Length: 450
Image (tube, rainbow, N blue to C red; front, top):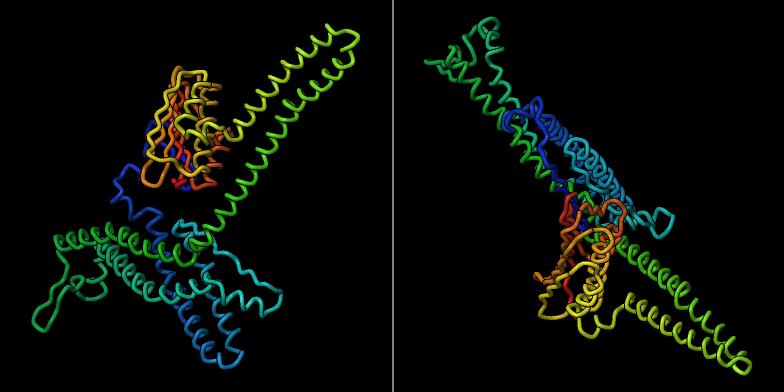
């Protein structure tokens, strides 16, 4: 079964059969973790964190202290700007390192946008940038954490592998050090050495426990690094929201332009063409009115039929823009009207105690209309259902049919455009349509009061 989700959610795919495991994949996760690439990458990340954190901390403390002390003169301003610029450079290095070793892809923050071209404009943009100060905070906070994580990682890694491999290098002590083995305890009266087979095996077993625990300790340590990199070195929530709204605005503008082109095309090819022909027919009838009244009467009768057809086309066009029944009676009546025009029997269930905002109501109406059109054209279904309900601050729509299935919104179909429209208002479209059917499409919209 394939499940696709759009909007702010990620896309998931579930295979019908699990893939066969090969090599180390046959071992339990706890046993294969010490030799997997992830553990070695995280260990390398923590080793590199310490020297990089020292460089960042020294740079920040030096430049900020120097800049603050020189603020009584103008020299302090460029020094502070240079310190922030250096912090941003270290942040770019840290994002690249996290991307390579932790497989954490964090977008860069918004670039600086100086209002002019001179150095003063650049310094002003640097000092006003919230991202620059968040990079500075990262260099300060990362130093103590990197020191702690480096120490813990080295201790666990070296202790585990040293004790685990003790049987392999235990011979060094009696041959070169002049003692029976690794000294566990010693004073003037007593000495304890790990030198008999039981003690050597026990030492190796304890080392194995450390080896097995080390990857999970490293994973816990790098989790904190992931949070710091994502929260301080990536774009802020406000910046992300602005980019998202700019993208959604583009979708709304494109959708509105497409709707205007569709309306213009329908008017030009439909009602306008009929009205032009009607004017010509009435002109001919007027000329024949005195010479051939019967032909003129017949032509007027045909023109009357054309007027009715043109009016019907205009009503259909107006219904496509915004149906009057939706404005007057709400979603229940409007969706029932849409369902009555579907080629398969449709059951409509609307459970709403109040009406949402007109904009949300209109989007919900056109979403169900388009989904029912897909049912009529492509599904080969014998029945369908439409359910509408409210869950907290979300308006939920679900269209189900027992047809052939196989609907795929990622293939550039009308479902993809519908998903973009919903995303423009913080909505979500979820398509569940296996190859043999049935198809269940769920739409989620924000609830806004009228």
